Image 1: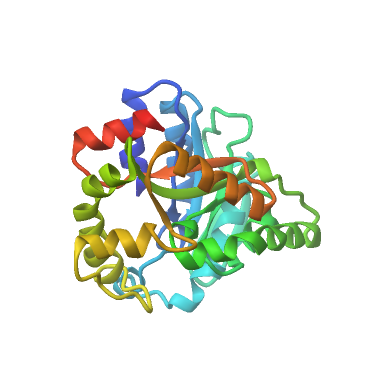
Image 2: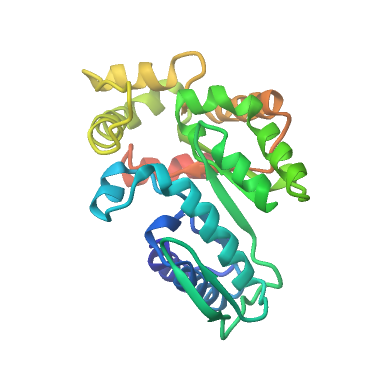
Length: 281
């Protein structure tokens, strides 16, 4: 549960928004999720953004005995119930194949008048469609992969179509796009600082842990930089501040516009170089 980490962050910060980037809803009872979001919102002084997803790893679903083919539907079902609870609807019953509510209502409502909500979106239209159905924001996580970047230009249309179908509206200002980067004064310096961490991240996490279809391990750290950040439609920026600005402007152009860029923090470089990268941004 990301709330554990965010509770610690809330105690150490004062202004930054705290988003659950995501709560995998099929793995939790929705009433408990709603309660935790409310508690975190009060503890943080009303800074929470509630982000949800269906769950990413087949191994997680397997260990919990959940059919992966049911996860999107369960996210949809849970999200609808959670939003009703957060809105303070009168007590209601709800029953489905995987959870039950009886006379359900929260004892305490969020500190914010309306807690911002977002759905994680990868490559398929399902995340955008769900966001449109519920009239909420989007966190494009798939933009950290080449396939996800290639899908971005057409993604927003799915949110708009679903919103119109269900009598909702969606706002591009609530579309957040995730990007990976390491920035230095020169491209050569950025590559030298990040290549070993990028090599391990790709081979150990993307290939061996996530087991994403079609991904092959890189043979050397230099191959990792060249294959990730030096190809057309690159999924990461390893270069200068100007390179990052150019990528963001290009994404704004091909997508028709979005509200926020979120940096995906990695430990590709050491602590000093990573802090310097963020200072340059």
